[in-house]
Image (cartoon, rainbow, N blue to C red; front, top):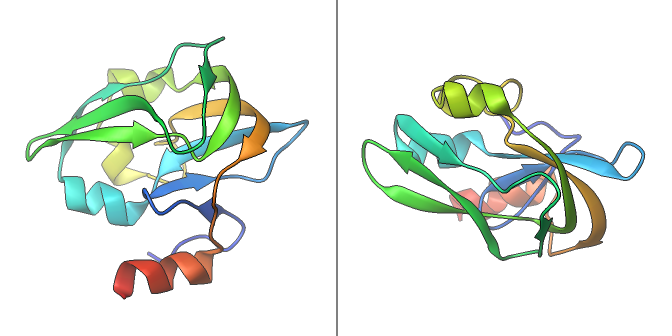
Length: 124
């Protein structure tokens, strides 16, 4: 699977959708999901909390390791994906669809890459 062109990406392997009414969706990339292995536990930020670009806001635990989750933007968490909390394997099976992690009302952005820039980053 290639990285969807309409998304933007962080060097910490999160993706970010275009903002709709100021709210963007965040998840981890297929590259990150594959590197983690089978995700068995997801800890997400709380709705109403604020996140800062580049800072830890949760964690993903797999059969291989525990990895921090970083926010690619700053803003207020407006929703979390309860489906992925109940079934963490969605992160592996559908990282760009049902495996999204949280929604954030964006107030600032960190360094984000286009799909092509991210592809070059992970291969190079």
